[in-house]
Length: 117
Image 1 (spheres, rainbow, N blue to C red):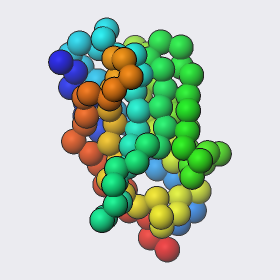
Image 2 (image 1 turned 60 degrees about the vertical axis):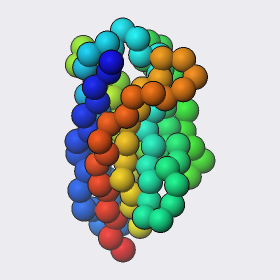
Image 3 (image 1 turned 90 degrees about the vertical axis):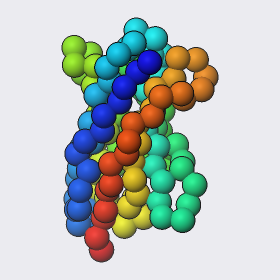
C-alpha cells in the first residue's frame, strides 16, 4: 500500500498563493503517477493536475493552467502543488492520489483551501 499525507492548506485572500505538499510512504516504487484533485462544497471531485513519478511530465486542468504548478522532490517522495493567483472558486478540499496504472487507487485525507474575496 501507499500512504499519502497532505499539508499546507489554509485561508488566503484572492490573488494570493499557497503551496500544498503530499508526502508518500510505503510501496512508493509502485507509483506511476501522482495527481491532485479538488472537491468544492456540493460538487464532485475533479482533476486538477498530475505529474509522472519518474519523468516529471505534468498535466493540468484548464481552470488552473498558468496558475498552478506541480513539482516533485524525488529524495523526499513528496509532490507539491504551488497555487498562485488564487480565486474564490479555487476554494475546495484538495486531495492527492497515486496511480500505478491508469486508476488512482490511493488517496490522501485532503486539506482545506479557502480563498476569500
